[in-house]
Amino acid sequence: MKVNQAGRATQLCILVLAGLPAVAQQYMISTVAGGVPPASGIPAVRASIGDPPRVAVDSAGNVYFGSLSSVFEVDRTGTLIRIAGTGRAGYAGDGGAAISAQLGAPNGIAADSAGNLYVADTASHTVRRISASGIITTYAGTGTPGFSGDGGPAVSAQLDSPNGLALDAVGNLYIADKNNNRIRAVSPDGHIVTIAGNGAPRFGGDGGQAADAALNGPEALALDNAGNLYIADTQNYRVRRIASDGTITTVAGVGNGNVFGDDGPAVSAGLVLPTAIAVDRVGNLYIADFGNSRIRKVSPSGTITSAAGSSKGAPLADASEIATFVALNGPTGLAVDFLGNVYFTEGSIGSGSGLARGDFRVWKITPDGVLSVLAGTGAASFSGDNGSSANAQLDGPSSLAFDAAGNLYIADARNHRIRKVTPGGVITTVAGNGSPGFSGDRGKATNAQLNSPQGIAVDSSGNLLIADTGNSRLRKVAPDGTIDTFAGNGNSSYFGDGSRGLQASLNHSLGVAVDSSGAVYIADTRNNAVRRIGSDSIITTIAGMGPAGFAGDGGPAFRALLSGPTSVAVDGSGNVYIVDAGNQRLRKVTPDGIITTVASSLTNPHSVATDAAGNVFVAAG
Image 1: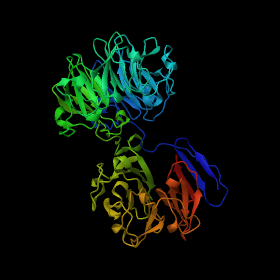
Image 2 (image 1 turned 180 degrees about the horizontal axis):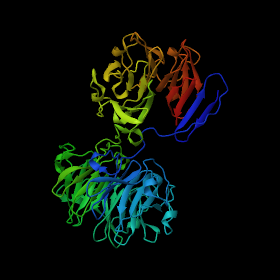
Image 3 (image 1 turned 90 degrees about the vertical axis):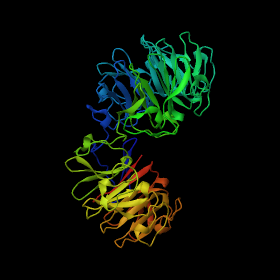
């Protein structure tokens, strides 16, 4: 037996099990659905914009953010325009059209008066420049993380996870070089120097020269009209300021957490992980106080207040609300325009803390304190129903299945939906309303709630079987579109063998398959077992004993040990193939119940499928 592997980050391993010598096969790969950013030219409030970490605004009031490996603009009319990136993460395209280039994780953005944009591409450890004519180049960084290059060309210097950016009136670009604990400056002639931070991740140096001071994970920068540079010294729980003479001081935060200090001196207030800052035209400093889920405002006299967020407030909603009456999740990006409107984002990556999940929107607060949505629907990546699948957005597609008519079904897991692509390429939702939860049995499947469905299969009668993973259930959608629970009582445990499937307990099952007789097989992942439901609706375990481990090859499968099986498939001879993910193996159970390993040392295997010719395909990597 020979394992042929193709690809890099994601590999397709082809196992030929027909008893003949393995023959290398050539495959052509193409995209059927998903992998695209939202379309340009649509109202921003109707677009799925991903998970933007930061936001910026130019002098004309156009708003910019990076997400989905792209850079977007929301113009003054509220229209969304993609100005860079293809939606595919990478680092490519310099010298060509920005719209055709690849970016990794676009983060901080700054705009100059000539219409050029500067983008901190955190994942590629570079700063890219998008000219007013739409051409992209690398402006700073080599693409290799590290610290080097001061005094020389910025394109030959090393950065490490650049985050926030700021531009001054003469064209100096300031970079929050987060993992180097430094602030770097690139002059208009392209040379780079360090202006703040000695590289040590700690706090120190107030009252002295900024280059000798210690910063800790700085994430954001802002400039005031006098040329003072403000630094969100994130891991030090402070905001600091560099004066024109190079002296650094703290202007907000005492260095420890919790919300306190409102209506008093900002230097005596508590901040937790300030991730973004902005300064308006009259000198008010705004702070994204991520850990306290507030936006704080420091007046020119140094008094701090809360401009948005309340621990007792109602959750954010689509309707206009008073900003100080709502509960924020954790703001990560912040900008203010010339009219005094404040824009913010709440990205999942706030300070790398994992304290909050993004809300997939850009928000706007007017000068009179009214909060509303500027961009985003609240879904990270969902669009395209009733249109071409090639232009649709998916979020976490995890499993595929075909029916006899050639329709392709997709478990769109993070959208909590099952999508269908017709042979003509039209995509629709066939199950799930997009809201995670459990409801809707005996009703229309598109009105029902699913919870992170990971596995799907279609039987010979056209019934769609769904591993409703987060609900620890197996759901079935009949050809007439009605949904019901087929197995699992909703309790995440290991129970019920010998009883009807509806009475049994499953535990976050990731995979499902069906054989020619209509028997259903379930990769019962956290139970470390594969279960079978026959035509009599009785559930049994055919492989695995419950505890995680590896044992049993050559013997009865029900006495073997598995570790986190993620996928299951059945061939025309009745052999059951199991992705034994925790053991990095593909295992096989014969019709007489004997288990063996058919492939080992696989790299992160997660899915298996068979074809009519007896080939077995394993997705790994």
